Length: 187
Image 1 (cartoon, rainbow, N blue to C red):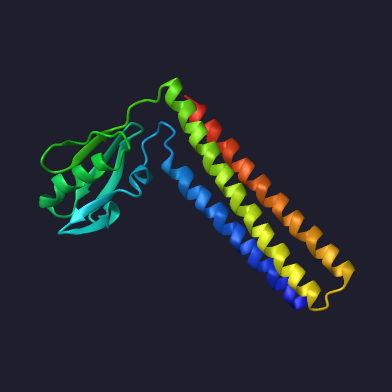
Image 2: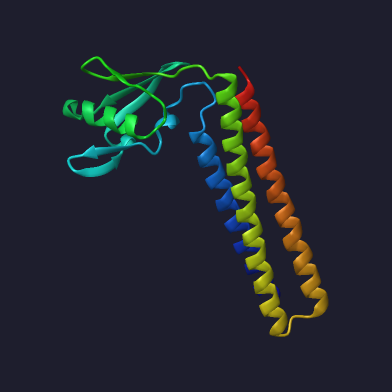
């Protein structure tokens, strides 16, 4: 039975780690004022009829804290990449010089910063919901083990351990949100 409990704990921790990883990926997409190549993650480009991630058709870099450059690996893709960036609703207007696209990242207004903090808070709440759903699944598995003969004491200990793991992951989510909020609100 203890191997079964250990497996439940490991699966629970693994699921929570995935929720945390997803949160980190979502936070990368929320810009904090500085230009980063990661801002274009998720932008899809029409590459000869197939939607393709921008990273697979161009080199993305930053010139400075306010400028992103996109250099396509094939010159004819310049217009398709520009369309993909505009259609991604990131609020960027790429400028072409015939060779590369230059994207000026505008400074954030106070109102826009507050909106980004709300979005980050929403993503953090989604991560917490994921952790709680994982807890429910783990507790259901413990109940199944109890029905199969797990002792009352071991059941209580397992439930307490699952709650401790849940609390630690919720704290990690809160800590990540606090860092992101500070990053967004820092001018």
